[in-house]
Image 1 (cartoon, rainbow, N blue to C red):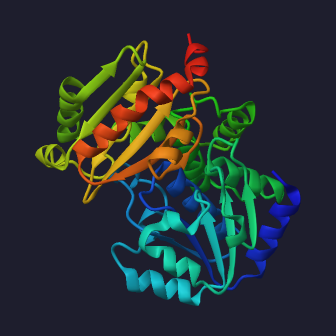
Image 2: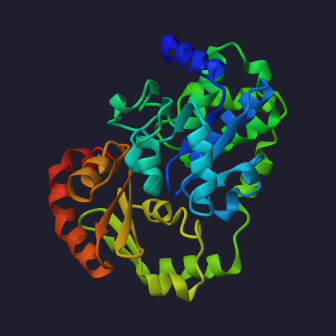
Length: 344
C-alpha cells in the first residue's frame, strides 16, 4: 500500500466533521465487510461516520456487527440524501466509479466535499476522487482496510467487531481463501485476526450454514435442470428466469455461489451464470488460471471485473442473453486457447 496515499486519506478522515461511507449496489460480503470494518475502526478512534448503501445486503450477512446501522437508498432515499448533503467527506469502498452505485450516482456526482476511494477493481475513474488507494492485485477491499489501519500504526484499535467484518470480506471475495489473488499477506492478516480472538469457524457457519429449504430446492433444480456443460469448450453455464426464481421464492443472495458450483466441475475451466431481472439479464463470469473473463464481460456485456471473476448484463430477456452468450463463447475460447490449455 502506498504510504503517502494512506496518510493523505487518514488526514482527510481526521479533519472531517461528517463522514459517509458508500459501497456499490448489489452488495456482497466484501462491500459490507469493508464498509462496516472501517465504520468500527473509526468508531474506536471516536470518529463518527455513517454507512449509506444503494440497496440492502442479502440476509446471510445480517448477523454482521453494525449491519442494522446501514442506511439504504432503496429503503429510505430521503434519509440517505440528507446524510450526504450534510457530509464533508465521502469514502467510497469496493467500487471505483460513480456508475457502480445505481440510483445514488447523481448524489455522488453532485457531492461537494472531498471524495476518497479504497478499492481493488481494474480501470478506476481516478479523476472523480480527491484521494485514493487503488490496488487491483489485492484480493479484497477488506484486506485493503486492514492494510490501511496497519499503515497508520493503529492495529490496537482493531477490535473484534472490526475483525469479523474484515475476515468476512476477505473470505467471501476469495472463495474461502482459495482464489489465486490470496497471498501470504492475506494469510498473515487472517492469523492476526485469530490472534486477537476472532472465532473464524463461527463466521463460516453464519455465512455458509444458514441455507433455507427453498434455497436448497432452487439449487437442486438449477443443477439438475439448468446446468449446461459444453465439453468441447470446457465451459459450463447456468440460467434462471424470473419465473423460475419466483417458483422457489428466491430472495437476494439465494443464487450466491451457483456459478462457482459450475466452475468446480471436473473438466470445466470457465463458468457463466445468467439471472433474469426486470428488463435485463445479469451475468456472472468465473474462470480458472489466466482465462480473462473480465475482457469477455467488458467487450461484449457492458461489464468488467477481475481476471477470474467478472460481471455484465444484457438488456432484454433470457433468450436473447443466452443466444448472445453461446454465439460469442466459441470465439472467446478459441482466442484464449493457450490459456485454456495451460490448465490441467
